[in-house]
Image 1 (cartoon, one colour):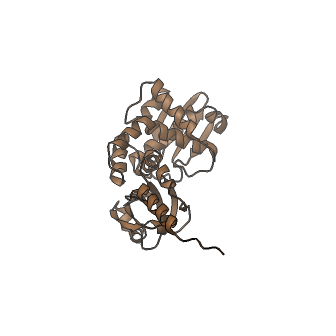
Image 2 (tube, rainbow, N blue to C red; image 1 turned 120 degrees about the horizontal axis):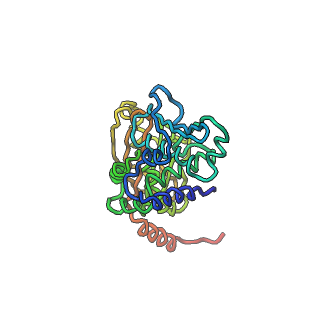
Image 3 (tube, rainbow, N blue to C red; image 1 turned 60 degrees about the horizontal axis):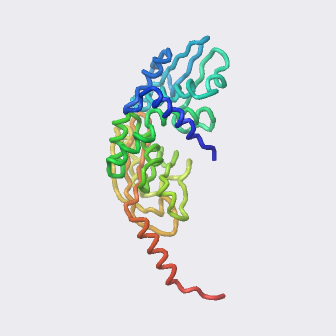
Length: 286
């Protein structure tokens, strides 16, 4: 697997070198400090999150407004800054005058787009400051929501970053209708043995809180929330089942649903129980 975290480190070093290591980071101010003109695209222009424009030695950034979420727009600007500031980027994607269109949000397979996404995450949610915000809060959706307010980032970008740094067993899932778009899991959750990683295109588990929530599109359009308990095995498979907390929010004009899955069971106790059961299980010779 390709490691794109070097792009995050470039962003974090930029903040350190320019005495900007405090939240929230202002990507527009950074762009303007480099002489880059930043303008909003009309809301009628859909399909791309942002553009890096080059004319001679002059650069501009245009960002999408069809998704009326400040955090999404700030991430789009930071993504284009990644194309400008990361070594070799604008020389490769814009060798001459022209426009480069981006689709930010960790969904592209293109290496330059993925690197720019990680740069944006490191710029707006630098590791050290983000981890301190996690430490202030109890695990779950409310923590993600509060940190998003501090960083002025979208819930989805914050949730992805949250799974990267939280010490707790947590997963963030994006879905649309009955299908999963993506799932990010924390390192602690990955340590649970013999589980499946929910993947793009797989069905949302039937009768889960998310499945019921997504049946009514008004829930998504109006940014409604819902919480309940559901089966660990139905989301992740594995050999042991227990209840997990499932917190769901509709993402409005984005048309999708964010789900935060949190294990409240003590994983060490579960491991000890499994080992005890295994030690007492008779082994018969064939």
